[in-house]
Length: 308
Length: 291
Image (cartoon, rainbow over all chains, first blue to last red; front, side):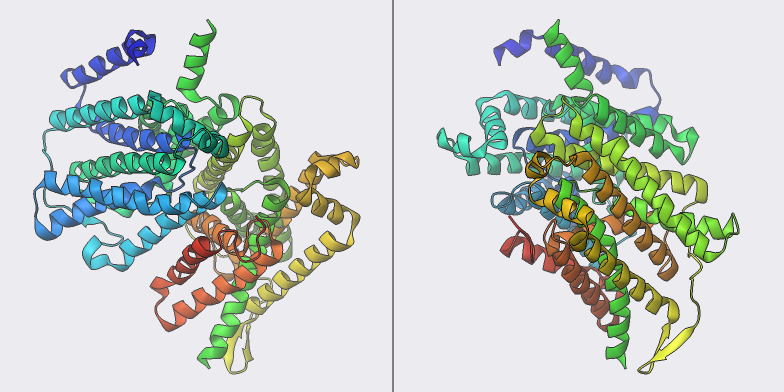
């Protein structure tokens, strides 16, 4: 761990964070708003990478965890008018409970079967939201009375700070002995178990950490938007974007996932003049990266550094 | 009266689901690939058939054939451009190939979907049915097209059964699903078998897509739900088990029709999803799946 503070990756990240923190001084509010969303999205992708890259669990429903956190926070604020911060914390806790429920089948099922359970979980949540429209706002979405702040700069710094803290915790965790045990149990559960590691405990922990950050980020995002809707935090397409972001940035790197997420959102925005072809171009680029640079952006950069 | 209505409508929907899911499960059984561009290929077939009639002014039979041909080409392209490069890549570790194939086919599906939306808009398109008119079965007014759909689905599934169980090619496919290494040792080229399976898949998905376009209509928004429904049917039946997914298709088709008629169309998909969750917990390998 001590070596990390001397590594090139640390200095590059530090530089990037400093530059990012001063952005409000010279870019427009429009770009700040875009990056604010991208940073929350980056946390989704990093949490997903902890589960997939390290625990080896393919979670097709990252939006189940995100959506539970986002909607719990939104509904509590809307129904009871509790303070924003209390709602955000409770949203994250609800997401942890959801992560625990999701982890139960993961400890019994392997491979595609677990992935399918998580996909079904998202579809169930989506149906639940539509059926209980009185409580959740249904397909139209839930309007939330309070927001954290309306100042674009403050929102930007909150999102950036949140992403940096999450990245530090998730990256630190992934490089710690716990991360190594997770990686071992993801790749060969039988041998990891035979070496005396409690796989169930470690995987459960990974799920809970992943759920906590997903839910927290989801809750923060709805208080930024001032609304929660299926299309922004629950839809399978959102989950797909999270997965694509993580694979694009480089799986098993945690930090790469955030890069991938920022790339996806910023690229989507830059391509907006191309109209309906924007999604096509982003998907095509992502497919080319998956086919020719399976390590992703950061994976490719790190392996080049290791070689030289 | 209502009972017959449910029986007849449910049968047509189920047969269509069965046809759509059969190709999907066949590919998984033989090559272990879950093709998430499934919905996109089905919609592509339907849109091609629609475009043949309304843009090129071909007649309905030719249009339907064109739709199936387009799906066949798209399926082979999926294999050669996306699946095979990932399977052969040395830079992707074997245990991660599954997620790469999933991500790759998903992105491919999105690309097809976006192209359809770009060239033919997002509007719903209904393919002109090959047979028109309405007949009266046991007091239920049934469109002839619905009967036609059910008949074609059953016929195609029957032909597939004959192909797999009674021909040399089919037996090779069956053998590859049981023991790929054994097949290679007998001197059969595994890649050729995969190409055959993807071609069969393309034809099945194409027919299912065109029929769906005639029966319910499609738009580029139906891509996701179509993939999801094929996915859940196949999981319910057991991944890779063709007979399992046939049973599951009828279970899901009738459950949905029952819910839509007796409770509310809004709750249509919920009972099937609940059943899926229960099956996953009690019998994760599905109704007829192998572990």
